[in-house]
Image (tube, rainbow, N blue to C red; front, side, top):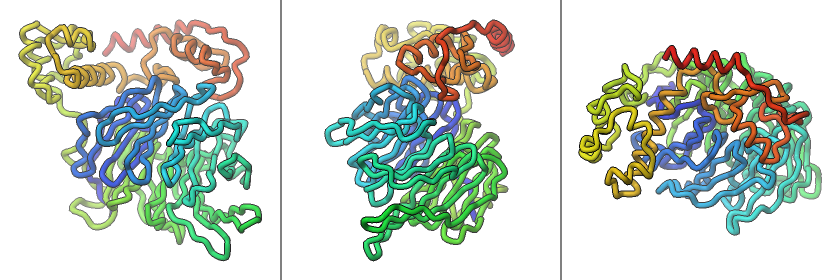
Length: 480
């Protein structure tokens, strides 16, 4: 029995990763933010969202003890945050500013690993915040990585479909070629390992574009080569499998797919236990809690579903209805765009967002919808809002409001692949894809000479205006 606890819909773009600590759930999105929720009631923490990244956030991870939160982005940085306050703790930059697609903590939380679109992997020492090494591990984008549970090895997976096992000095220990036809999407190591007669052994799950989830036994005999033995090939999902994760006891493995389903397997027997179908878009992220029988699943439908494994108060997952905690708060003036709001609409919005103390200053300054969406930190200070924290909360809420206005219903082809924002000046690059001009120009200036979409070299930096796409976006905006 699996039941749906709640659905969280605060992100303004597709969900890309979920991660649990003992008391928190973190999610990240193409909307450039990381959001943090308390698992006591799945309410969002007051400091959330975390908004330091310049482009979409691909991955977020808690350290094993839960004392650190890590995120990485297309902007070429991995960022450390305090999970309790949301304060930034450090920024780790890829030396070539290549887009970072995936990141991981070592089991002892002493190191951070990140895989990049240029085929490199970077390893940082957290004590000194220094880069230990950045080396090429593939000739394709590195989209999957994880440490072994013993912390002495790590695994990388690439869009060409290969899995590779490395030691901490980046010496190749084993390569499993074509582990997934058409490309690896994710990999996850079971939390436990065993040592028997000087042989270290652990289990690894991997998934990919071949619509398969595979469970491997990885072993290394002292002084001998590493081995990867295929234990199970699981084919219950009918489309590419984008994400996978082990439970903290290693007994379950969960996978999310392009067919919009979540599959829950017995990791030992390789048998299907549950198929969950609640999302309306591709399931791009899955995570299991270390402290409770919960699964978090994220999707391109911009929602994060939280499920309970085992007997609960709710009905079976396949038939369950969303609980009251799901969704955005109802807008009192939801029939209007913010630019059309009256002063009373703005004041109602402030109360809904928990900013009732600002109603007075807004009323005194006759702030209506158009004035609201133009507010920033500086103009908020001019209204007499002295608290830096309160000004920050206000600006974050306004940015969320504008993201709701511009992003949620826009066709995907109208969004820049780099920023995932509605394009204003779309241009065609040498790879044939359209981008927002400012974004692709910044990408090229940042020493990224490969395509953000294909990772192949851009033959020229020439950009051609896409006038037909710009006209289509203009027509769409005028119809909203």
